[in-house]
Image 1 (cartoon, rainbow, N blue to C red):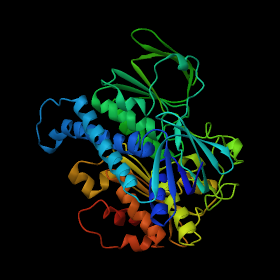
Image 2 (cartoon, rainbow, N blue to C red):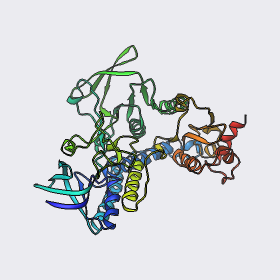
Image 3 (cartoon, rainbow, N blue to C red):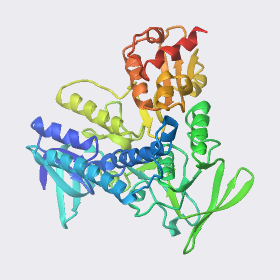
Length: 460
């Protein structure tokens, strides 16, 4: 049995940089990964999907280029080339990450599945055969999450797709049915619609993006339906079956029963933490009723010296949050700081076209908290940069405190919405009030310049 100063389970966006930094700080460290270095983000999430979304946007822009006076003619989609470009980028990122690990002195990478056999002891089932036991003073769990499967009759008997397996299909689906009308489902739905699939999105709530404000949800619904994407809400799926040619989905939408056929079904109803096989009962680490590891504000579990980072601990499931988890843990343990996850900003961006960038609270949340607030809103059809570039879909929206003039939150459904949102995030973190942004000098003509006009709406 080998003893280390630190063990990291999972080579994701928290695990890899943490392992390298601990080793560089002189800690004897081992990083255990059961599949691929880079975690979901590099292999199945952000990197491959955003690479493919770029191809889908190029198709869309080519088709609408005539509005700008550019006649392109018929647009051909080379799906194999799109996939190859995606694979090349993923391999580049993964190999770079793995090279960095292997070149770090004092850091060992083991490919295998780790399971607790005692409080600070792990048994690793090695991918190349055999077992190895390791112990450590510090153990960091960064095992992430996987696709949640809804309880639908017949689902386990069909060849359904997940956000992982859909990345490797050989041909563009004739008719893709997406179960789930939130971030993952909408990105894939729009992408494959632009690749040439007929797309139907099924959502159990009364609207897509049910956690967002109604005007944001309505605006994106209109954008997607204008692209000929079918969206069905208030859905209860009774049964799914499959024959040699088609998948059959029997559902109810409100009081209406429907039987829809499709060539492919993508399950995108959410994700669940990968804790079932960790053997946490052998080390005493507590979980909530959904299987997420419970941590305190310093990311430590109820067992001293065992930490959980990223999606496995629950809370906001974003790559940048996992990375921030690593920075908090590292600086606290090695640099003696006292950083906490409490009250940290949680920005996110959904990469539909247009993007939805979000920071702070929504209008819905402001209402629920009975806050005194005002809303500033401007449609992108009134934004000069949007008009000039023919990117007029969507809107900018901010929730502000009229007394302190602080920005409480923002939703930017716009071309480069994530970048515009980030400007407002910086303002919020720097306590820059909306009246200052109202008169701020921005370069012309930029999207950010339109923040002048957005907050001008509050003058009325």
